[in-house]
Structure formats: structure tokens, C-alpha cells
Length: 327
Image 1 (spheres, rainbow, N blue to C red):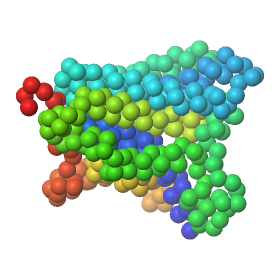
Image 2: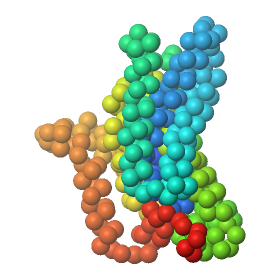
Image 3: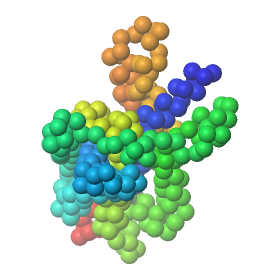
């Protein structure tokens, strides 16, 4: 039982990057924008947050506050990734560029952006770009007190995580409530389903597309920040985040564009990502374990395509540019 609990906890820790990326992409796609650049946004957020925290500690010296550094890292990660999404929104909403091409371009640009600044400041730092243990612990330490964490079975599963995991879960619940229960959320969904009808009803299609894309991109960037500060221990590793964004895009479909499904979906995919470290007794080559998440993704896509149910389908206008003069 202990081994199972430890595996679930590790799956939660590994899957949180995917959860942020999935939630951000769900918000974006609900407005009809298919942003395939999540991989780049995760890199931009991870590099932007880590570099901002490192620069703050270098400038403040011994008087650096871990809390201030953490806030700067958090805000920087969100804003840098939101800026990347703003570029995408300008191309696809204002210039009406092809969303698939623009998303792929953002993925390439974002990964290059993150690796360039990460590697540049790693060289400036003398070969290792890393924040202090005090600042890193703000992101990695458990939120709840020890007596809750020590409750048998329940404690490790529910109360042993850092604040960003609980933040991701909170964002999922808030996003689900927003999309289903608020006037603004229903308007956003209308933009993704039938932008011409929404426009005729007085809803600003452009505003909703821009806001959802930029805020969704910022949430994706928090996934990159989580990876560098928690999974990476506050240390920059150039290739460590490879593939996370593409899995997040696939997880959006797995979650059927529903934020709450993204929570357990990210745990499932997180478990598949660490399976090679936990199931070595099967004597299967490590490389085969590492492709399991992608195999599951393909199976899910095929299954959903065969089922052809309304609730399994994306927003009707997803991936299509809106031309107001043609309504």
C-alpha cells in the first residue's frame, strides 16, 4: 500500500506541469483558438520565472527575500508566456493567419526563447543557473502542517503537496465554474462555438479571443515555472521540459475540454511518465516505458474519433479564423 501511495504522490508531482498546460489550453480553445504552441509557452514561463528570480537574488544579495523572489518568478512566468500568446493572438485574430501554422511557429519560437535566455544566464552565472534553497523551498515545501500529512492514507494523498499543485486544482474548479455558471463564461463559449452569432448578439469576439488566449498562455507558463522550481529544484536544465507541452495539448482532448477532467487526467499521464522508474521488475527496456504516454494519447484520439459523440467534440469554430464581413 505504501508503494501505491508513493506512486500516486509522484504521479501528482510529475503531472502538475501538464495540468497547468492543459487548463491554459482549454481556456484558449473554448474561445475557438487552437494554440499548438503550449510547448513553447511552458519553456518561456520556465525560463522567464527562473531568470527573474535569479536576477532578483543577485541584485538584492544577502538581503534577498525568498517570498519576494517567488512572487517575481510567478508574475514573470505568467507575463512572459502571456506575451508569447499575445503574439499568437495578433497573428490569428487580427491578421487572421492560419492557427495551426501560427501555433507551430510559437512552439518553435518559445522553445528557442526559453533555451536562449536560460543558457545565456547559465553562462553568466558561471555554468549553473540556480536559485537559493530558501527561494526554491517556497515552491517545493508542503503547505499543510505535519499532523495532517501524517494521517494514514489520506494525509500523503491530500495534504503533502506544495502550493502550486493546490493552485492548479483551484484554477481547474474556478475555470469550470466560470465556463458553466457565469455570463462572461457563456459568452466565451459562444465565441468558440458560433462567433458570427455571438457577434450579432453584441459579444466582442476579438476581446474574448485575445483575453482567453493571453490568460490561457499565462497559465501554461506557470506549468513551466512549476517544472523548473519544483521538478528541476530551481535549476535550469535546457532539455528537461521537452515534450510536456505536446502531451498537454493531447490531454485537452483526453479531458474533453472539461477543466475538472484535466485534474485526474494529468495524474494519469504523470503516472505514465514515471512508469519506467517504478516498474523495472517487468524487465522492459526504459525507452519503451517512455513512449507509453504517447501511445495512450494515440489510443484516446482514435477512440474519441470513433465514438462521434457531441460531448466528445471540440468547440465548433475551433481553428477557424473569424471574418466579420462574411457573417
